[in-house]
Image (cartoon, rainbow, N blue to C red; front, top):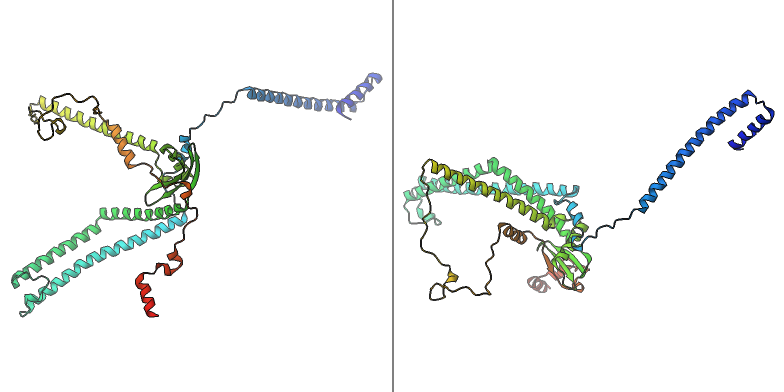
Amino acid sequence: MDIQSIFFTIFTIWYFSGYIPEDIINTLNKLRHQYSGILNIYNKGFNILHFSLDEDEKEESKPVEPKPQVKYEDKFLEEIRKMNKEYEFDKDEKLQESRQYFELLKKAADERLYQITQVCDKIDQIEIKLTKYKGDESYCICHDHDDDLGETKEERIETLVNQKKELRDEKNKIEHLFQSQKYQEEFLVKISEEARNFIIDKRLDKLENCHIMEFTPLGNVLMNYDKNKESFRFYSDSTIPYRYLEVVGRKFVKQFNCRPIFVDMEEELQLAEEKWKKERKEKEEKEEEEKRRKEESIKNKVPIEEKKKNVFAKFKSYNKESGTGHVITAAPPKNSIPNKKITQNQENENILLKQKANRYTYEGKIINFSFIKKVDRKAVDKKFGMSFADFKKGILKK
């Protein structure tokens, strides 16, 4: 029986009998309070649900804005810019880097020791010769065949003494150089870079067997990377413009996590522009400083050295007739190319594009690409690496 039925039954008893026991009244009040609380919770929940439904209807009624379409030229651009431009080594690579560092350090120490030892050996040889010249009167200069210059014994001794002094100075200079703090700091930085480049080269070697396929608006492109040429090699059955090759290069870099081999042209041009602005500002400050010095020198009546201008005009070679040397006074032809002035910013951009840009090498059609790596027969069978001399020796032994 639900709460409403209980209330209805009690009300009927009270109405017809006119008497309700006190226990029933207390129970009735408790039930009434509970029932009113349940109704309040129900009403609040209903209002919240009704409000949320109205909000959902309003949101659904709003028109969905279409997402802006990304140009194909800008594909993978955001992902590339989020990647790290520097190489990040794992534990194994860091361990290999430290081993290579200590090997290079030991090799360089051995080279320095060998260099000093060579100088010391030359000094010892000269001291042996001087001892024989001074102690043995019968020792003739003709015994020294390497340095026989027709000198007398005294002249020869003086020459050897000077050579010994020069070698000692050279030895002291080498030792001082090796012990200097500047040399040691530069040497350690160089060794560290060589060890790091060694690991980077090993990682780039792994890219030899990596390739991707991308469908561009002008056809399929298959691409891999050539470490030796520092160029992306691509295969395609159609002519692909540079802007589409940039997209394929971004996909390759994203796929195989090799961001440092890729050049973002927009970022590089921004850096070049900032550099150009800085140089231009420094140049303007320098010109203002020179102008201020000139004004001060004029006030103080200090003579300023100026270059004497030549009153005669010096014509360029293209303004003279070939062979005769006469100056051409006629107007240039109408179809001549105008001499446009190139601004410093444009010059910097041209230099940047030549020095730092992604290179792409066309290797032919996709059918020319071999998905199966060729096996080096010389590594499998030593007979293929045998020279003709070794082959001849084997036949003679038989």
